Image (cartoon, rainbow, N blue to C red; front, side):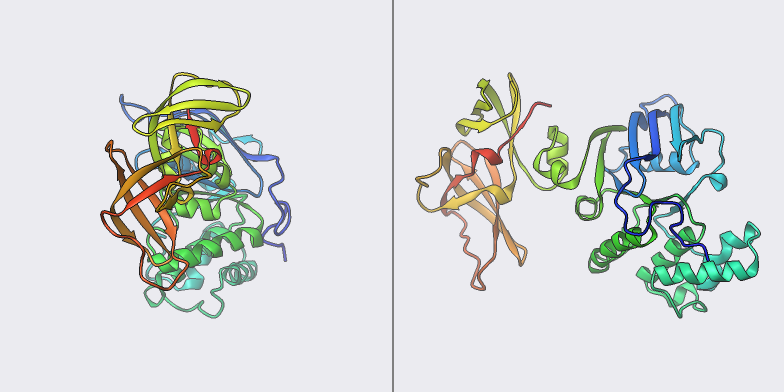
Length: 375
C-alpha cells in the first residue's frame, strides 16, 4: 500500500525549505474597485503548516481560492510543486480544499463521502476501499463507516471532510476557516488534532483564519493580511513579540498602543517622549526618528501600590474596571492625563480577585518589553 505521505518528506519531517507554493506578484480585482488581493508575494516550504490571518475582507480567502483554482489571478503567477498552475483546473491541481461548511453529502454514509472523489476518478474498488479506510484511520473515524452525517457530531463531520480531502493524497491541503463552526471547547481540541494530523501525513497545510489564537497555536508561520496586502510574515513568537507595524501589533493579541516622538537614537537605545506618559529610553536596534508607535503587551505590565524603586519608568493610574477570566484578570486603568491602558494579572491564588475600582496603582514595565513601531 502506498503511504499517505509518499514523496512529501516523511512523517513528522520538518519543512524541507524547498518551496512547494510560490506566489509571485498576485493581484485579484473584482470589478473596478480596490483589489481584493494586492501584489502578494509568498513562498511556503514543503511540510509547513502556514496560516493566512486577518480580519474579514482582507483577501485571505480569495488568495486561498486562487491556490485551489476557484478564482483566477488578475495578474501575477502561482506555482505549486514547481509548476505554473495558471491553466490547470481545480480538479487537476495537486491540492485539495476543506470548506468552512465541510460540504459533506447528507444522504451518503461516511465511507461513501470519503470515497466519492476516488469513485468519480475511476479508482478501482479494492484500492478505493484501502485508501478510504486508511484516511478514516488517520482522522480517528474507524468503525463509523456506515453512519450518515446527521448521526455525527460537528467535530466528526469535520473529520469526514478532512478524510475526503486527504484520501486524494494532495501535495497541499487548503483549509478555509476549518474550526469556525465548532464550539469553543471542541475548537481548542481540534487545533491539536490538526497539528498532529499534519505531522502524521507529512504534507503542507495552508489554512485561513481570522482567529489570532488559532493561528498562533497551530501555525509554523503566519502571513498577516490587511486590505489585500501581506503586512508581515513570521513565526508566531516573532509576530507577537516583534510586530513590524501598528496593525500587526494591534491585531495579534492585546496591546497598549501610544503615540511617541523620538528625541534621540543611537548605540542601540531610543529616547522617546510618550504622549501623556513622559520620557522613556528603550533598547532599539538601528536608528529611528520622527513619530512612532509605542506599545506594550498587557501581561508585561507590572502594578504596585508603591512606586517601584527598580523601575526607570513608572507612572500612577487609577483602576477603572476589571474583567475576571478565571486564570487571569484584566485591569483597565486611566492616568490623570486621561491615558487609558490595560494590564493582565495571573490569578495564582484561589482567593478573591484583588482589584478595586478607584484603587491607585503604579504602572511600570521593563524597557526591553517596549515595542517601537515605525509604521
